[in-house]
Length: 163
Image (cartoon, helix red, strand yellow):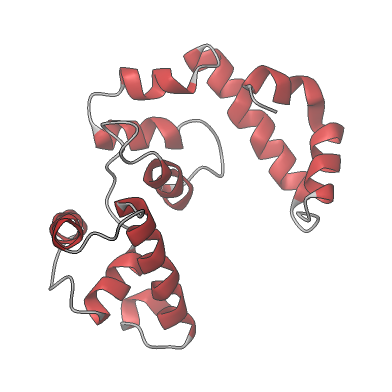
């Protein structure tokens, strides 16, 4: 499953089988539909080449929008996860941190009263002063996201996150 074409050739039944084997039985039908839609759109819009999305985007915001336009179910969270993992690989993959990452950074007093763009700037500055050998900014951001989820689950979050 290394190319959109291969995924499309596998078809819906094949994807459902793969998802079931991977433990995704709860959402397998819906996920297979979404994967096929995204791969079809990737094939049509970008000739099946993920790198063209980055190449054709003018900036990080347009890149995020292009990712989201690939199909139903590719929303802000999915685009953010995808682009977070490509930070440092794609120059324009520089989306703002999630609300949960900002929550954790705020609780740790790394970020102070910032907009998402301001939080990203503060997080990058903090990381540049406190880098850990063998780890990247992506690792740091992912750790903050996990901690933010933990704060959210335990009810230690601002009211706007509970809505």
